[in-house]
Image (cartoon, rainbow, N blue to C red):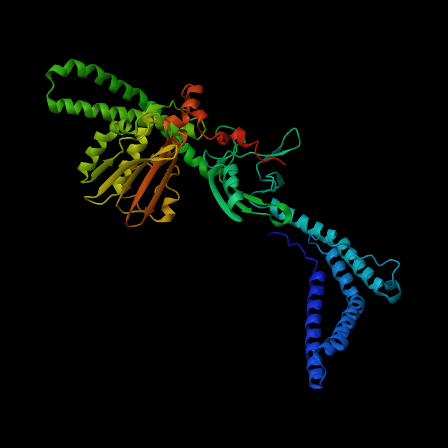
Length: 506
């Protein structure tokens, strides 16, 4: 809450008294003029000999009497303003060596100051008691509490808060916020446009998996511009390490299984590469189509396995990709036949519309094709019988946005908010649609590792639109060339946990 600045009330009051006096004098002069006119006195004589002298004498009397009568009010106004807790620009009254010492008015003003001093002197003892009680309560909470001032320095942290003191005596927050969603980025946004704001994060860790002292928190941050006490940002942290460890163990198991499957899939693809050239002269058209399907499916399965392993690495902030200049239409063609086959078997229609002048993007084609496959496959699963699925792409600033729209069952807001979480599956789809709940999580990991973002809009009963945006190649070409095409150069620089730790000091 902003602190109110006290105005100097006496000058405004004095102006009101002056205008009231002028109005009253004007009325009296008009009445006196009417009476003199009725008595036969001429206008000139009336103004020169009566009205003008009376007005001058009244003004002179008001200046003398008004100053004397209103001076105590001026002193009282300035005294009360001086002892208030609000900012002001008034000067304190000086009554030493004046007649107010004899009249007793100075004693009245001194009494006000004395009472104020006594009240302020007794306040710290109460405040200290309150502060001790507050500290006790905050330290017994089952979660962390951190307060940041306007400069984003740590001004308070309870015992469970992940805060350490470095060699310089600075308080440093140990939190690894996700890419494209850091606390710093959120504060940069709200400080310039909001008075009050709130933000939630899930699964924010203090260190990479494997660290002995690693903890994982769900976080709520509350921002209030110019807050009382200087704590503009309050961060509340709820330790969910045990909860997230279950999901991480599941992903670790899947990663282990994927790792074991990589060998057999590699062997199958090798046999296909050997068999096809040898059998090519005797293959019929249908058999060639089957070999094409086997090639596409084995390639996709190999990509899935690689990306499950990548998803495990993503939790450790190590999902590294090599990004090349690619056409989104070419990437879509990698999965187009397989998606069309799946759509036709479930009586769905896929309508694809890409502009001819779509710029190239910076992409790992196998990874991005998996995201496209996940988005379209979800649309196929949740569309209605005979429904159409629109696949489109468009330029969006320095990005290309790819969208998949369906007209199916749609989702309520409570479901949309958790869609990209690890192993998330809504209660409605668990028993009706097959899946692991990992596809969208992996898709989000891949897109963010491209320096892009995922999004979804949905209306229950009307359908959903899933989208992702990735940078155009031209916008990141220099960074990729400087880093040998590795993606680390285009991912938000504040996403790394070590870098995050240096942001908030006090």
